[in-house]
Image 1 (cartoon, rainbow, N blue to C red):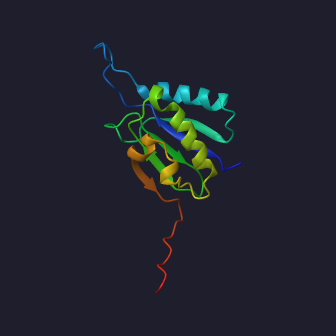
Image 2 (cartoon, one colour; image 1 turned 60 degrees about the vertical axis):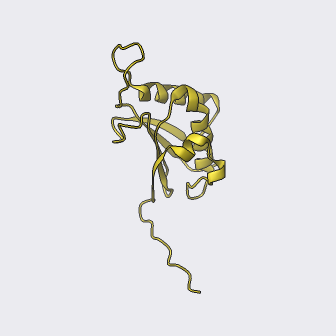
Image 3 (cartoon, rainbow, N blue to C red; image 1 turned 120 degrees about the horizontal axis):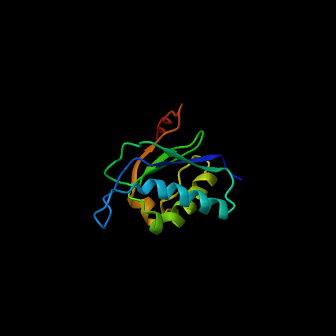
Amino acid sequence: MGSEVDIFVCISCRQQSEDGGDPTRPGVELASELKARLAASNAHGITVREVECLAVCKRPSTIALAAGGKWTYVIGDLETEAHLADIVTTALAYQRAANGIVPWAERPAPFRKGVISRIPPLGFEQPAPEST
């Protein structure tokens, strides 16, 4: 089993509804569906946490994958129906990765295209380059 992982889901962003009605908050639906999918998958140690703002308003829905001692990923442009399985797959791979870095080839398409940033863990120090 890997480390404890938090998936922060921004619930503030609003999108205009297709029917012209009141704007929707797609992150609210994403967080709810993600919690249900993780529970159904028996994914242990992964917690979905709703947050008011990840400051990526132009790329809803946005999530952040975080765990102690691991790089944090911020990913945007996620849609509940299209990307729910990809989020679960990536969260499990992230949980297994010692440093949180999921190899490029193992990332689903939305996690190759949608990465907004990768943030080093607290206390990270860049190793000195090896001398030749």
